Amino acid sequence: MGAARAERRGGWWGVAFVVTLFVAAAMASLPTSAKSGAQISAFYRAHATVILVQQVLGVLTLVFFLAFARALGAGRRRWLLVGTLLVAISQLATTIPPLILALTNPSPDAAFALTVVEDLADAALFMSIAVFSVAATIDQVAWVQLSGLVVAAVSVIRAAASPFGITSLDVVAPLAFLALIMMLSVRLLLATMPPRSTAAANP
Image (cartoon, rainbow, N blue to C red; front, side, top):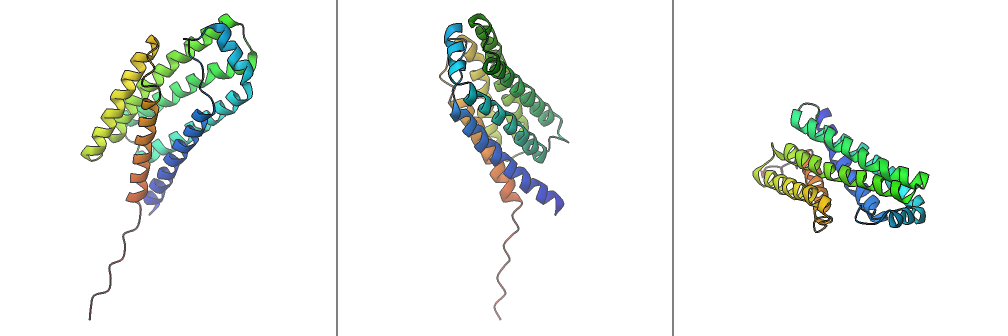
């Protein structure tokens, strides 16, 4: 009963992660190093408060993600633990440059340099997502495993393409990952539902 309750909570942690991350992502689209330093500085000056709130929500989503990964078995499955830690570290790495930019109002050159760091951290995040997606689905049924492989492939392509300014997967890759997390969350919730009682036998 205790294990079932923990898995049920894990499913809700996954749902909370998806919803919170979706809200945070919708708040603002951060500039990449494709923009000039002056454009980046101007953006952060104009949207500093929104960006600060967005990054705080990003840290909150990380808490939800860690709780969800624990329910999936990150504590006892080595590669799932590795994938979870990689996602957590790279997610934090993507949060730090925007916070610095929003709080310090640096020069255009410094703003551009920090944005390059953020872009690299973002690429690392999607590589980490690829590892997590495979590790989280490797013990699932075949169609879920296939879904994990597809998300991993899309994430790797997104990570490899972003440094070259290719943005065609900037929306698809995150949505695919969120869909995978939601699917795994629903499976956790359904797996812990008590079976329906059978009808009484006819006399």
